[in-house]
Image (cartoon, rainbow, N blue to C red):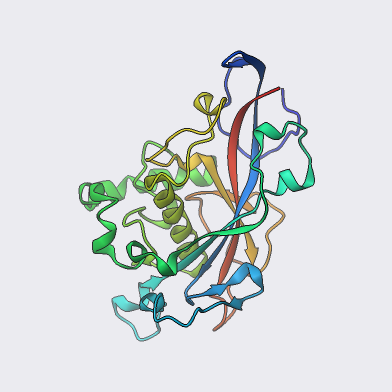
Length: 282
């Protein structure tokens, strides 16, 4: 039964309407919850969703990755390097839209992660510590399979079986902000954010919340399921309407880029992160 019908594609929900967590019975429900806010910027210590505030502590860290696409030609024009700031942002809990708070992410707004102080985020060789399997997918055949993920994510939802792909944005590896196939700021920033989300799962910081396994609580998901997340642009222009206003990981950015890139200064992006949650509600 759909409580809030939507035309947006949804993941599969548990087939049984009732569930049991220990001795507590409940009703199986699924919903999309805005739980995180993310800055994706080429400028270290630039907090996009805080009005572009610069919070540089004064240490010489984070600036190794201050680089973006250039107009000088050659392969360097396709390289970009991004930083991500990850905020706790449980909107539904604050607004009290759903009464069963056991199913909701609770808390107040807070900055949870800053990539400027993470050495794994700036060095692809160090990143291999947490994604050694990347060497298995650094070949034309594996990359060609990402075309299928691109079509699936654009038409409906990404393919979780192709976990090394970020759909139309490129490949998930390495799990850092070094993007060597930059087409545009929207494409590259969404790829950097997808990699960052995967990185949190690989480091066991972020856990799984979707599917039957998530009915009674979060569970370990070291290989991130891309279908669990959607990214909605908040900066430089909020996207609130249309099919691609809150697109899944890997969807084409052809219809998202309009009005999102300002000449010379349009390289800073902000996103609201939606997460699919299945829960055994009271």
